[in-house]
Image 1 (cartoon, protein in one colour):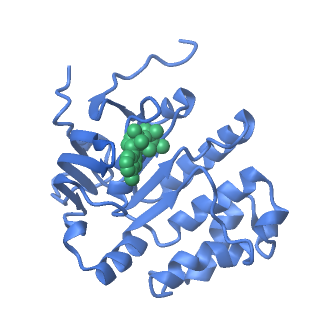
Image 2 (cartoon, rainbow, N blue to C red; image 1 turned 90 degrees about the vertical axis):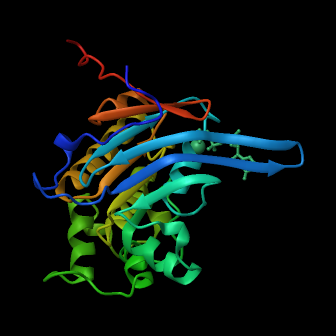
Length: 257
Ligand code: ADP
Ligand code: MG
């Protein structure tokens, strides 16, 4: 059985070229996180080590309250570890000054939550462009960022909805737009916290299809926190968080086989 305190990336599943040593997309080394509360210290993560290479996809499961969201917030640089270190593409984000950290986060990290958090006053196109504006508004390579936004919105079936506002769309459509927004800056890390948690089973399955398809097109490392074993089973790797510690879950036999 894999030692719970040292979970190495699955190198064969990454898209980085063989032989080329690039830093891990995400690297947790003995990370702990505690909160001081009036009722005492709450130890949420008790020594988590985890590494993911570019292109890798990982599901995190575990009971409610086990620290899944805390782990994701740490990876997103929204929280700082109590001890241990976190590197994203080789950089220690929590050592950056606040201004640099905000820029780092908007360029490098895409976030999808259970709620879409689209802004109601903006159109779908404007919403998905917001992280690009925050990061300086420039697209990369030949394709302009607005062109990319329109292409991705078409790819998720929202081509006819670019000028609509969130209230005019269904829950599944809003969540698809939230995924496009998370990917607009080609983040090196795409972090999703219960991304299908508010959707009915059929919509959840189609949103998961889109998430995995879009992830496969780029080289972001993907983490999906989910209660759904159905969704977790679609990812090549799964870890389970229990009582603040991670264990690598063995691959499950294919359904129906
Ligand atoms: P999960 O996402 O697995 O349900 P969370 O990461 O949200 O779990 O929470 C894990 C534990 O950490 C819970 O017991 C929660 O109450 C506690 N916790 C999270 N944030 C704070 C905080 N800011 N202060 C105190 N306790 C917290
Ligand atoms: Mg949570």
